[in-house]
Length: 412
Image (tube, rainbow, N blue to C red; front, side, top):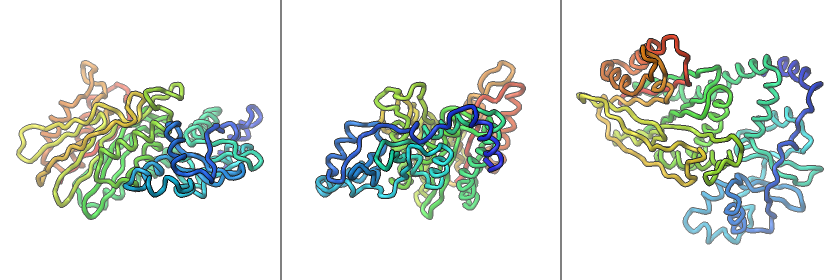
């Protein structure tokens, strides 16, 4: 939000409402002392499965945070428990977490969190009172408070949403640029239903192959955009931790992170009204083997080999990522498919498949996608996607667009 718009917004807001502060976001969580070891850290994380980060204190003052996922990943390595169990808990501690006073205003806290980087939103931040540890704050409640404050004035809300669209598109730009720089015959369509959307994509190329994701998060508009931020960041962290070659493992890692972040653990919704997650398709293409490794969460793959009479469909698991009913240890499956020169691959979120239209007001469906892919199989992928968009627009007619729209078409 531009400074002038922010100033106008706050001038209208402050006389009518008490300004929330960091203390309103403070959550009472366990803390651990520097004299305690990693075995005791493991016991705390085992007892508190919803705990994303464990504060470390010394003399009542916070000195660091232990990230749950990083800690468990390190301790699961061969012989690491034997080596580190009896060592001090500071071995895996982030020594420079964001620390704020409980009296800090939300506006200043938001600016500090953004300047501090994405770990302040994913790992959380420490809150103190008069320099003494009081608890932790988390990125999602902070974003919710900011959203509530924005909604107090509709004009400012719309202004911020338009600016959020710029931010969301900027987040996706790196992947688009990476795709454009490859020699791959590929085309990507991303059209949010509203100003911002709940779909996102990622693409990255390496000498030995490339990785791509097309995902549909819960909701659309502002809630959907918040979920894309959460899902995209957790996916990036999973790729940093595990690498891009095992899409199924990445989905499992994101599933675990989203459930812990949103308190959707053990089949229970610890945050009333929260049952959020994403459907997604993740790919790793091995250039040397000319093999596509695919893992899907309630998302299917359309595949058409040269000379093939019909479009083959490869289904993903019928389980979404992060939702209340998704087990925290659910394991997705990689489906590895050898591709021939000229093989055409297509994947879409349900915004295309479920769009209502036609004379009987029914869904566009998968059959029409298969028919169009067959009819357009010899054309460049950009032309194929344009033909799909034209067919969808004709099918939709006067009906309202139901969902965000994202699909990815490529030929090897």
